[in-house]
Image (spheres, rainbow, N blue to C red):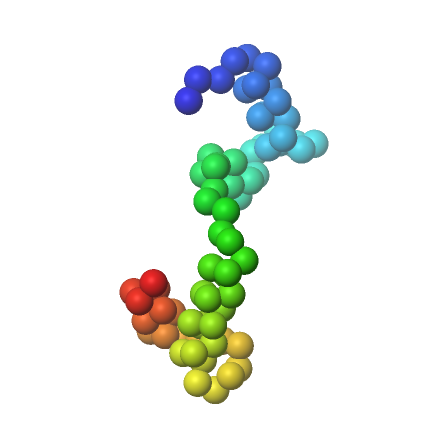
Length: 73
């Protein structure tokens, strides 16, 4: 990535917001761009897969259940 000086200054001002420190969470979000944009259909399918493994319908799942969904995706 090659940034011009003005681009670098703008990026720095976005990440430092009234501080001399960079919010590492914002930095990681910006550094990982561009994100793939999920379609509504994909989001609904993913939601259904998580609901399918949530046997107690509690809205939470275990790590093993999460991995089960992730592996089958």
